[in-house]
Length: 181
Length: 78
Picture 1 (tube, rainbow over the protein chains, first blue to last red):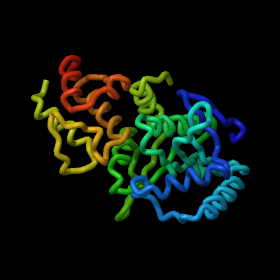
Picture 2: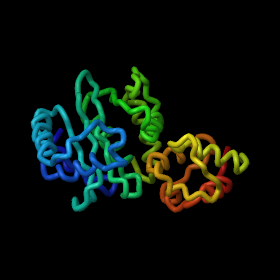
Picture 3: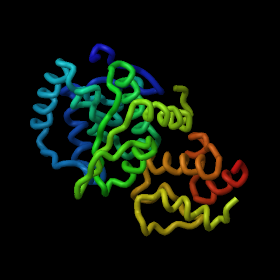
Picture 4: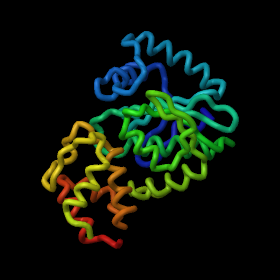
């Protein structure tokens, strides 16, 4: 799986996160607007680097994949997505954070690309995710795929989305964004 | 075609804030809560409710609610 990257698609470059991306990721995670619905993040660059060092061990074992989306020439970093908890033909998505000033649909394209890629490359039949109830834009986006709410608590909804539902709605969104599937 | 007021109310429902104050001249991209997810939600709603597909390049050129309304009015199929 990890040898498949980097991949160029939709005018973007998708590659796996490296330790050298720590500063960019920390900047995203401590951004006032972007961090509204995130769990607390250490502001230490060393903590971020150590987190990535541990992640690379999980990546080596094909347990987790942390993707960074960049300009096609790899000079400008736009944002990140992560796939983890890969088990029982299911995977979890999270860490979806993109710079807020890129002004187009790059964050959506990246999410659609990564989930499509993972469904195609694995035998997974569903993805799961949690969304903060107050994170209304993200909730609205995920509900476009008609996921099943499997549980909820005071702060979060917990969703499960079958591969077929994802593909069906993903194709529509890709088309709306003006791309070919 | 729904009235312009009904159209604006449909658009309003796609914004994060429940009490968002918008009218036909609103520069919707200036809202703090505006992001590409809101844009996508509006495009999907317009396709479902009005039968109008707005190409992303066209949508990006719209500045006010009235810009969206005029496009939908001229292309509505439902």
